[in-house]
Length: 221
Ligand code: SF4
Ligand code: SF4
Picture 1: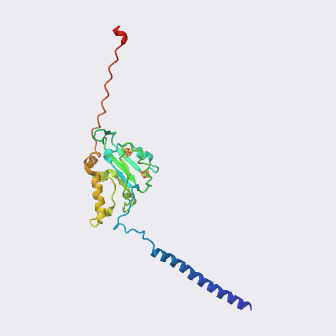
Picture 2 (picture 1 turned 135 degrees about the vertical axis):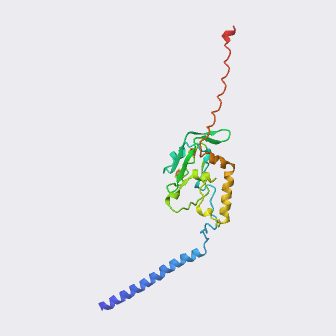
Picture 3 (picture 1 turned 120 degrees about the vertical axis):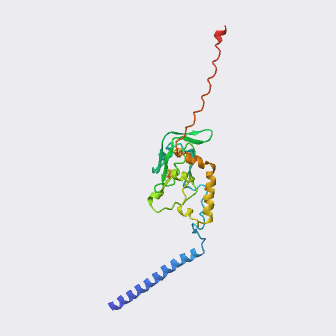
C-alpha cells in the first residue's frame, strides 16, 4: 500500500516537472515573439551613424590656441584626469582672441578615468574646452585612452578621432564628419601649431590718461 502511494507521488512529481519546463519555455518564447515585432533599437555601427543629441557629452573639443593654461579645468575635475604643462604664463591677446606667451607642452585627458561630467567646462575663462560630439575612442591598450591634445593640434585636430575613422574604407558619414571637424577648425590651424611654441605675450592695454586736475577756485581770487 505504501509502495503504491510512493509511486503515484513520483509520477505526480514527474508530470509537475514536465509542466513547469513547458511553461517556462512558452514564457521565454512569448517574450522572444514580442520582440520580433518590436521596433529595432540596435544600430549597425559604424556602418550607420549614431544619433547624438545636441547636448550630448562626447570626447572633448579643445581649442589649444585659446588656452592660457590656467589649470582651472584641471582643478574642477573630480577625478584629476586633466594634465596641463606649459613653459610660461599665457595671456589672451584681446585683438585676435588668441593666447600668447609660454608654449603649451602638454594638455592631456585620461579617458579611462573621465566620467564626462562636464565640470571642467564651466570654469574655463577663455571658453576653449567643450564637450564634443564624438562618442567613440577605440584603441589597443589603456595607454591609448590618454589623449594628448597637444599631439592632436599638430595634426590639425581639436578632438580625438577613432582609429577606424582613418581607414580608407570607413563609411561615407565618417569622412563627412571628419570634413566637418576640419571645417570647424578652419583658419586657426596655424595658431594651433603656434600654441606649441613660445611666443611674445600680448602687450598690456595702455593705461588711461590721467584726468587734468580741476582748477583750484581759491587760486583765482
Ligand atoms: S568631464 Fe568631468 S571627469 Fe572628464 S575631464 Fe571634465 S571634469 Fe574631469
Ligand atoms: S580652464 Fe580653459 S584656459 Fe584654463 S587650462 Fe583649462 S582649458 Fe585652458
